[in-house]
Length: 97
Image (cartoon, rainbow, N blue to C red):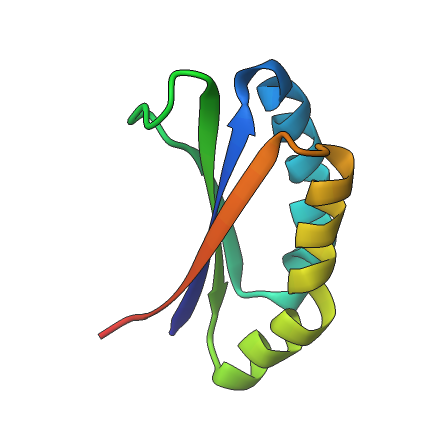
């Protein structure tokens, strides 16, 4: 099992808008993945931002590859365009052992 974690850091002034927006975006992707979990991080890293973890689960490497090719860059591009200069992200690919 593979898990792609994308952590977003959003300015607090945009956190409510981000939460509403990302819910719709991940619903559109749901058919391409095994499961999706979304979390708001409670650990404060920066007092001016809110942080979110979106986790996409894949049963196979092929399923992950399709997601990466068709949806990953599109999702990140949409986030950057929607929240111009008010959002950062990093991603991590994990494998269950």
